[in-house]
Length: 64
Image (cartoon, rainbow, N blue to C red; front, side, top):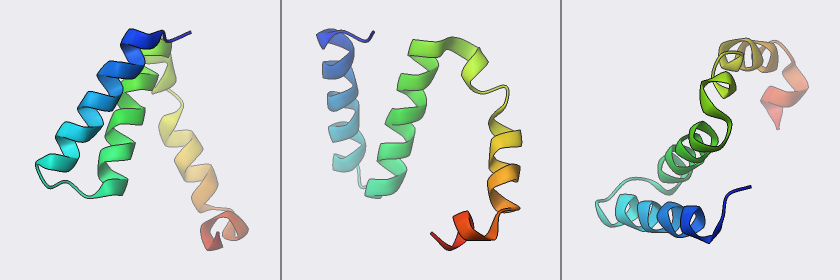
């Protein structure tokens, strides 16, 4: 579990990305990706392409 230090680092990173002018969605995705990498390690990103491709093939999920 990510402790208060990890949450604080993520919050500061999010604010930093927003202050330099990054879009909100991009900043949130970047912070979430860094947090997932920190918490789960590299095993989080190994099935990432398969998950994205599977979602793109489901038209209901693409519409949402």
